[in-house]
Image: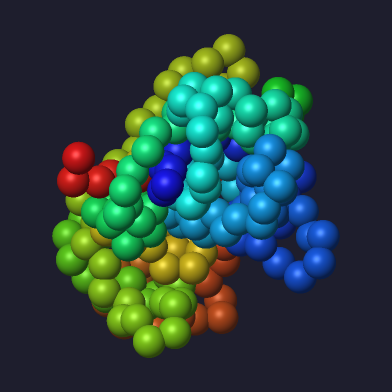
Amino acid sequence: MRWRATVAYDGTAYLGFQRQIGDTPTIQLALERAVERISGEPVTVIGAGRTDSGVHATGQVIHFDLDWSHDERALLKAINAHLPQDIALQDLRPAPGFHARFDAQARLYRYRIIAADQRHPLWVHRAWHIWRGLDADGLHQAAALLLGEHDFAAFGHAPSGENTIRRVSVSEWRAEREAYGLLWTYSVEATAFLHHMVRRMVALQVTVAQGRMTLADFEALFRRAVLADSVTIAPPQGLTLEAVRYRD
């Protein structure tokens, strides 16, 4: 039986989603070990996306194959009982023929930035803390340039054999005034993402919003579609995979 599940995790203690050599802590390894403990058989867990080291998720989607004689609720509880506290299935159901990665139509990420004069301990592993203020017009204008279908090679590498053209349907910033300062949230949804694409997009938009790059230079770099060594990457802790879209 093929099973489909939504997974939430705090990625702080893990070197990304994808399994690596040996006992390197990853989300995929933790999930596979949890399922193996209740089934007694090795399984392979496939995710909709490969989040980086330190990146979080509230809506990662996975699938795996497992023979199970009880109902899905019992399986969900059993797996969660064997997962560490920072990883948990949010739902689980049978899904014959489903593929978490290949069936996905789009992924939604959110990146959070705190602009404040002091640290906030509860946000250390959830947001990028920026001491300088951000120009709202610069953020909004840069984000708008990224909408649509473009070659996003300036922001990341594609898996071997794939092109770097992606369609971005959402690219927008929202600011909320909090007691400690401004909380900025960047929402971006696309058919798929290149490696480090969101974090590079965020870093360059911040560069524009801080007056260290003009909007024209940002657009020229983007249109050039060549990954430059000088393009910085925003820290991982501000990024969360919020949702994966499917036809159903």
